Length: 243
Picture (cartoon, rainbow, N blue to C red):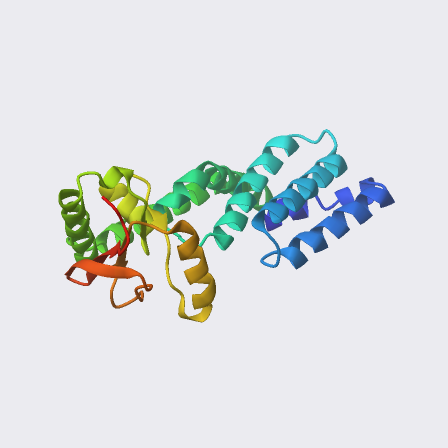
């Protein structure tokens, strides 16, 4: 990215004062508001920033594609900076932009080095780095994961306990995981000690029939009784729930 900006540094001298001021203001606004406003607002500012760059660049080669990939990557980065749940597989959604950025970086860097084999060497180094990273990641994966087994057992027990579970409102401190295990949408409701009042209010608005949680991490809201507890995972039922 730095090399690409350097190679296009002449944009500052080729554009009018209005375009420069707009670009600078949007750049400052994008940085200053990051993490302080809704990520939707940040995404809108990002889009306006990209449009200002496109206006400055004019008809330059590949400007549209470069900007599209940059916006793709930055919008992903913005959204997942706000998202409370981060999982490794979420990176898949931004891999096309990452791959494009790597290819563009190799091309721009090779153009500066001016050696006929620069592109080949850089590509080989990137491929080696990615392969090493993948091997290291796979080597660190455990053969068995106690958390998964305990959660699967709790989900299986609930399905057997209440055959009509698919019609119930179910919440969990690990909603995405139990959505997978139960085959139905499970709301995420986690009790954060530093925001307990807000979490309880959020929980009461949903008023779930069942709450599945890790006993050593999440306190149980009042009005619920534990009907299953094993290996650290508990299933609680709303006391006034009718069949």
